[in-house]
Amino acid sequence: MKAPSMALLRAFSPIARSEALPWTARGCPALPQKTNFSTTEQRQARSKNAGPKKDPRITQIRYHLYHPLTPRPLRFSRTRALRHWTIHRAWQRYLDMQRRQKELALEKQYNSMAAACEALRLIDAHGLTADERTKIGETETKDEGRLYRIAMLKTGVWDKVPIEYGRIQTETPPRKGWNHEWTR
Image (tube, rainbow, N blue to C red):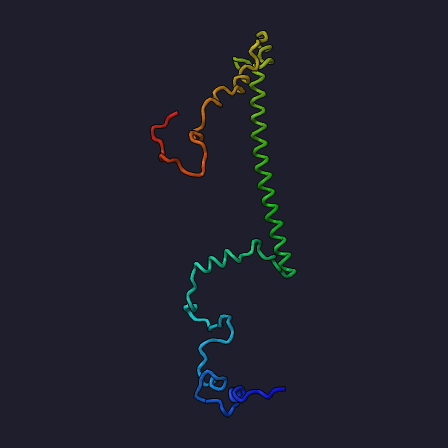
């Protein structure tokens, strides 16, 4: 085995080392440390002005890049979970009650419309039903239900294009703004 060279030994020898050189290991503690050894951000004491100003653009980019798609699950104690469940059930019952009230209102409207259509179907052009005509002594007429048939006709409903469809629906505005001369 070869002996190490003297140049190598002199480089690492404590006798040959100069105390004036600040970049050596012995000179480092004498210098004030300007940066942390770690690359993580140093925690500073809280102050009224809340420390260094953060760039809102960077904050937004971080938010949209690393924001989870689903929120973290709620972790509750037993009593808080029971309270949460109770409030949730009460809210669901309230929504069910509102939904049922809307359904009942729509059902009432439908039933009254059906009753009105049935009344129109049973009366003649003079507004008399078959029972009322027999009481008066009139004979049956052929125009019974005529008002119902007229009411159910859909004449003229599909003749005109709605104003919304005067131009094909697109995602971009028209080249010429609003046409003020347009009429039906």
